[in-house]
Length: 336
Image 1: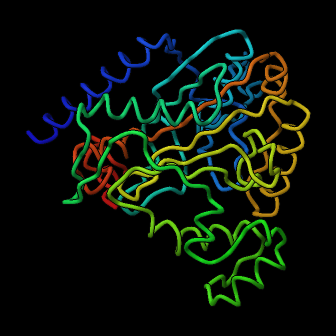
Image 2: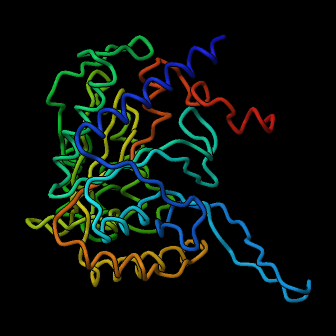
């Protein structure tokens, strides 16, 4: 009976999301789950499958490698390049090697939406309005912690968090050598870190993320440009990019940015990510030339977001694990 109750609540949330976005003139779209070129993000691992092409004789048959998308982002941006306006999509998303803990399942539900003539601060307002629309209240309680949803929600830059929690100004630690030296002097554990980004992630996960407020949602914005390959660079400081993540109850539920629309710059960043994937001994994918061609057709600024609905519903329904809001989590299907 509990599963039926939760499914009804989740169904209601889906209806409310669609109503909220369609009332704001967003068009719901559907893009393919199987794609020839997935996202290039170095730390994501897609599922691989094979498309068998029929032939008259068995010896004439051949196969093409396809991937289950890790995000519908590239395909949705192609639609923007074809003249679509504000769009959204609720879709199943797949990421290999993401299993364990309370926040991961290899198959999960994501919503992405893209707003024309907007930047990442406009998407922050969308988040505030959508989630308060779902709750209908100015607060929620998650695992006995009351979380105020009163708008506007706090916003804080990544660099400010590093200064406040670790006494490290990233502007003064832009190289691997200086960052490593500073972190070591402050007795921060950065063992086994091989480059600048690995130091960043280890410090962020161990010393910053656990200290984010639990009683308020918070937008953490302006991430290092090296971690925002599809985002617009911050004009006043190109070391950072116009990207944010949304945390509620200390849990990261969304990733968003002002979209990079310069195809030449985008190509450079994708080539860099190819090099990183090769260094990490991950599959190196071709550059999606159709994606780059469509970027050149987007004439106005736009911003987009990927929000994990299972995590959001887990929070709204006060469940400790996303497996409680997924009818068939992988661990149960495989008895893991």
